[in-house]
Image (cartoon, rainbow, N blue to C red; front, side, top):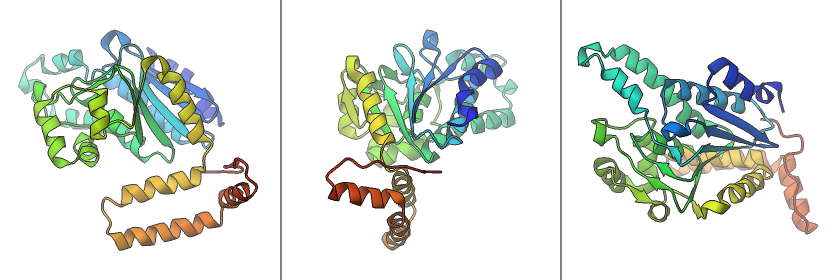
Length: 287
């Protein structure tokens, strides 16, 4: 593990202040926790800055293979901080600086972009509400996987405060549930429970709340022990498929497949299969 990630928790605390984002390293798995339970982990400018900084530190550490994102307390996140929004409009519409808003939006958008683009597996762990002014659900959707408890509830509530959506939800949501259902969820903003979210494809698994932490930890370590280079190519190929035709995807897969066939992980996987044992991947793996 590099020194930057060893220091990331103290860095987030000391440099950013208030410990609004917690980082816990468990071997090749890192858990990033939104830590504003008193406001249901609502996202403000400072929290988003800390989250982005933590994700950048994680991205630079080749020893970390899986990222868990969760919220402390009764909610994953209640979305945008309403106190922050109230302060924004306190001076009236004339006081809102569009340039400043665009600058802050660019900062907010860095976190979901990092969660999506990281060459690691990202998992949102939702035990409670992922509702509010949409941001919370959008963060979860930016992850590769979403694991929820039976207590989880989801909603896009942008319309309720006269907004259209941000943090990439207009891109991620229709890719998961289809365009028509995405429009319904965005336009109506209705709450849906974890079972309905699972049926729609918003979440991958629903686990009893009492077992959520342990089951998610086991899943994360299972993925962390898998072939990381192959996983990275899987993510890249699936992402590229949104804008490529079938023949382009076939060419991309041929290149990645050829590269992997020359990798130590392929040799180990085939050897382990023949020897009827569990493979040990990632020996000497470097991102």
